[in-house]
Structure formats: C-alpha cells, structure tokens
Image 1 (cartoon, rainbow, N blue to C red):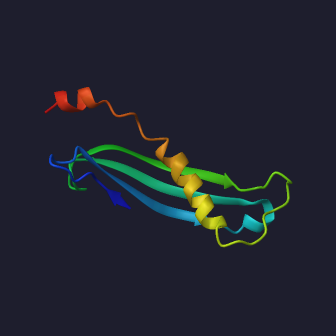
Image 2: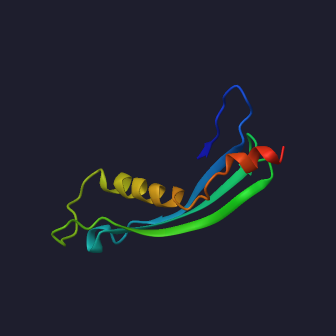
Amino acid sequence: SESSFRGATPPDATLVISLTYYDASRLYVDATVLFEADLRLFEGGSTNGRLLWGSTVARVIDLMPSDDRPPAPAPTLIPDAARAFAHEALATLPERDPVAAHQSR
C-alpha cells in the first residue's frame, strides 16, 4: 500500500509497504502465520523521491488462544493476523524528528 498526506503543503514523505510473503499453512496446527514485508520511506509525495529509510520485516504471528488449542476456523483469523503484523511492522519505523526534517530544507 502507498500512503502520503495530501494537505495544503507537500507531503514530507511517502511510505510504501509491500507484503512479499505470507504462510498460513500452520494456522490450524500451532496457530501461527508467517508474514514478510518490505517497508520503504521516500522523501516527498511519491516513490520517485530519495529513499530515506528501508527495511524488511518478518514476523511469526501467534494466534493461539489462552486454552492452548489451535483456533477454530473463522473468517477473521487471517485479517486478525494481518492487523497484528501491520502493527508490529509499523513499530519498526524510525521516530520522526520534525525539527531535523525542516532544517535540511
């Protein structure tokens, strides 16, 4: 997905998150789903800007209920795992320093 803020001023950066792999084959065995994604932060409002930061994030998301039995089939399991992965992936982003960002302009 691609996201940038389109306000009155040009965006400072564009974040691109590309899900490169996921494996849910163990979901009903041990309640885990493996995800991998590339995160790239570009200067300005498009991916044509200078690459400011990039990383690959891989996580095993554990959906095991508290009773230690694999979850029953449900349409929400994969979306729940994807949300948990997105939360963990976004937590890897470096903190933004707005003062430093505007000093370099």
